[in-house]
Image (cartoon, rainbow, N blue to C red):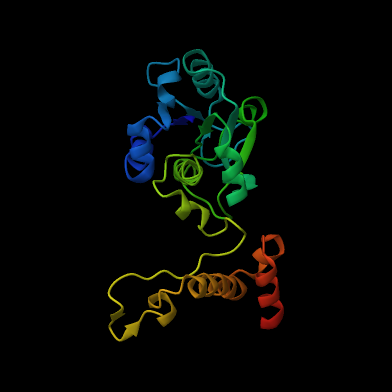
Length: 241
């Protein structure tokens, strides 16, 4: 997978991409990620990327020209992207199905805004889609870009060593994950559930399925409407009501 990120804080993005599974996948060549400094695509000697808003108002607006120049350079040197993603509070809410869809795209470009926002002509002419990671305001698009890249990268074959762990992640089937435990079997008076120590794999699978369902019912019942449930899980839900 090929990913390009356009930002005025490349070191911030590079730091987030250097560690963990994403960092290892970059080193292994599974992910081809390039971070571009937007200031490199300005035409003035001060590398200005923002200006006052037309019509007045507080703050500054990021200029259109550097984004257009940056994307033109990506097309020339990296190929035409399949999707150009603008990170914005006005975008579609990012979800696990959205991550799965993006993981199937060969070349992604992420546009990171700052200040009061980006000139609307960037949204109109360059962005093919807009993504929000939640109903709150951050200082810029860098943290959302890192979050989206991490979620998408986990679904690219070879990025996560144990692909079964990805298949069991929260939201994969529309449910929250079941509780996890490791050694020691008792800590601070708190014991691991006996079923996990039993060696009975059928009972363990049932316990995990039921605790995932119970956790979802208690914490995120809204997810159940879109969850993929088997017959046993549907029966359990009926009995639990």
